[in-house]
Image (spheres, rainbow, N blue to C red):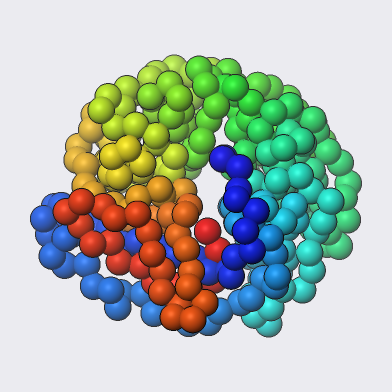
Length: 310
């Protein structure tokens, strides 16, 4: 991830809604700004800079928020609706993953390259692994007791969640941004923006097996998946600001529609068939509560305030 600005920012998360089934024209005409309603706001406190990724401990109803610019991780009690603890002493925490079977929280630090691990019960530090430069996105395969961390100039580290040791490296052509694990198989889909590609990795061999060129679409940072029966990969690009849909079986690009500028993360709601993306540089005006983002030609992206901050 890119370095934060160091400004003090209020805390809120903005999301854009895009239908996964409609055409670009339909989306432009049908997106309703009232689709999402604010249920509650949870303050993170007076933190410096922006936040990055999130993870959840569902059993304990806790949310972990990487406060990248503040070198800390907020621990939020979702039932109580408040921050109950802050993990300090980190160095630009970016990715977070919680592994239920090991009851362990994994935090990837961009500046130090460390993956720091905390015991779930009391959040005490129990181990760390030095990966090197720019430890970033974290993904969890709980059934296999594996944690995957993108880092450096082109690799994904594979960590055994039980022994808390690195067991393999998956080499890539450049630094990986967002990546997702295929729940129905052994694939990993990886955004590699500096190589202008989406990489396809086989988890059984820890090797890249295919490359999908992104052609005229550049700076692919967020990525998410539609699981079977659709099996589609949704990658979001910053130049131009597009959401592109790829067939997961062969990498064919099926469509591309305008979306929000400077997107940083993406999620799919399979029930409502929505894709949601958050912009990295959204700004919040304390007086009005409005969000502003870089304009996208031809489309007025709709934003609603949720908990957190971009």
